[in-house]
Image 1 (cartoon, rainbow over the protein chains, first blue to last red):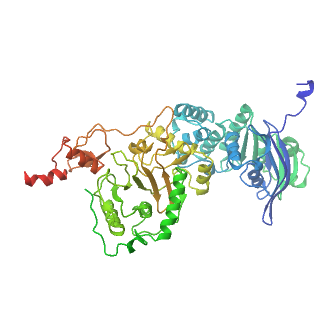
Image 2 (cartoon, chains in turn yellow, purple; image 1 turned 90 degrees about the horizontal axis):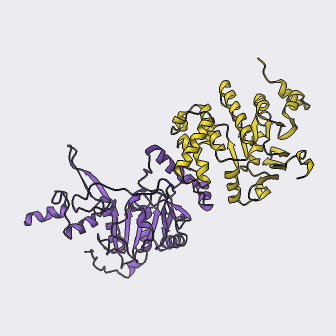
Image 3 (cartoon, each protein chain N blue to C red; image 1 turned 90 degrees about the vertical axis):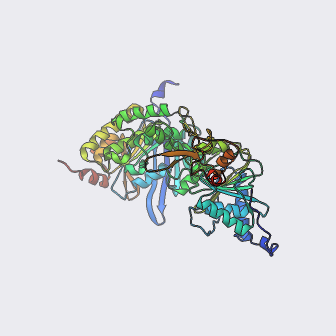
Length: 265
Length: 309
């Protein structure tokens, strides 16, 4: 490569342009554009109803946008619009290269099968047919998310909320994705559990060099996790920038309100 | 051995709306059968009709039989392998009545065999049709409740999820403990639930000479395995597929290689193992095979012979 390659930002992993979603006459989100580079953590913050989750669903291929493009650097097709792919190709790409951590573990886990099977499922979806190998990988991952590996065969309902969330994290990282979506991953947890889970997530994301898009209404989560922030209001992005910059020196009146309304103890 | 039916006075007219269903319905079902045969293992939706038995008693199988049966057919109906259970007897009587067909208990003689839970022990021949009564045609249903999603999974051959149930089995029991309705891949393309037959019978489906039709009346699906089709039971590389085995032999006929039912005999815990395929067992006894409990009062043929001795 040439001498200045170190200064050139790497090619984007995900590139969103003009993304708009209308629910009939109701606006979901309007004209959102950003690039995400490998290993980068992007936080999307805003009050409820501001279009955060709509945006996340559109980007993650769950909800077809009304207009705009979501281009992802797929292993098989290169940088390509995910909504231009055929459905089987898109589903395969989602299985192989993405993870999605839901706010409520019940949405992201199969409650009728054991925690271990939940964690191993992505491996089976990708063609794993050797029980012993998958079992070992599952145990390794449960260990990595700091769960008691002896409880591998317990059903998710027998785990606490924080533990369920850890299972969900393991399930979404075991197959080595390059991009993980997180929708309020610490939403329903009490503060101490929240702090430990955030700590774990931060460590994993750093170790694995994952790119993450994290949606949250919690400024503390955004501060801890995100490299960059996007502030949304009424379906539009009102401010973007480095996390510290946005939180320490908010420019838009709404961001100022958001930052100042964080409770201090 | 088969029971012929005397000719009726109105024989010519009986071919119109013959065998309970009207002509249009049979035509619709036959079209679905043809499509099912063309795409082995694919579940073809069809307009299932109300039948004179409740759902779960074989409405899918009865409709399939009614759609393909003709006056020259010889009909056999089994339930759990036995010809003499209530359900099998009444369905057999139903078709003797509405279709004027000869009925039989002899597997080799029958042209149409309707079954629940078993494939007969005697290998099926070309020209025979085996009709399964299916309660739940969707093998993935237990893990994925959404029909839209399971359809997409079949369309795109995304069958990883089925292995989750096998994984659960191994982690709970140390082996693949599922016994009935064990999922199979048909022609390496479609995942199929082989109705609730024991996995003991799964290998019999592979490369079978007979036509196998599956009908689910409540779920309104027909699927099929044409003759000489590859059928593979799913398994893990380190936990290969295996069928059930018994340490006992059949108490009446001494068979070592047939599927055995355990029968409790009294409150003291005495029990016997007998062939689930009643015709197979009777045929072996007639050929002189003797099991350890031959002559037991449950051995009906022996019981009948007793007064003569």
